[in-house]
Image 1: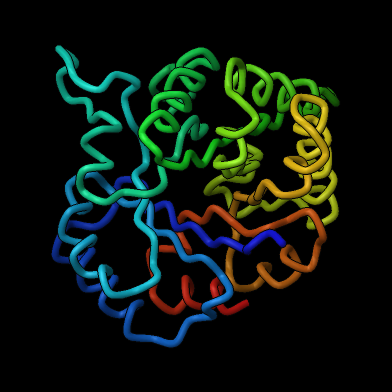
Image 2: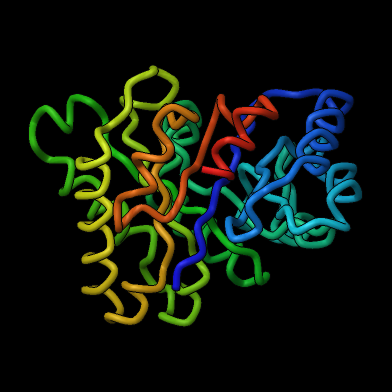
Length: 248
């Protein structure tokens, strides 16, 4: 059985004081313990937030990583550093990383491998632009992203990956893919995984939807059989909204 996940991607938001205040509020409220809650927060907040959630089942995630363990890479953070402070999940290949920082499928693949090598769990993001969807090539784009990201990765390692489908045109725009459209794409992704690996992995790997997910649409999305949760941006920055998603 796939455990539902709600992962909050804070992006470049929240000072340390603001982060601690929000996390205290979240941890003190009742949450559905059958839903895995993950906070993917800025690097500078990771250590202190980890201390705060130590006695809870809330999981800690980073938003990016470098593929080397150490070296002359000014400004970068390695998977070894993240593991050392108790990070469990790492977002890799988010569309904003691809768009603004020129991350390619090859870079995404290197990062996924590096994270897995250290026992961390990637949240691998894939998704198409509006232009690509309007051309009817969304499956070609997403299929290629999946295959390239997983190149050279064993079935055993792949079982520790979470995939997040985020149509780029729905991120931060207020637009959301219909629950049926999202479910169809997640089913397509699951079939791709079955082609690469096997039926067991295809059926057991968790696939999230992301793109303007909010309390008003979470129940409808989670009613679909392929959707195992959500990677959430803006709604993860407010206690009541984030809790509403977890308690859908």
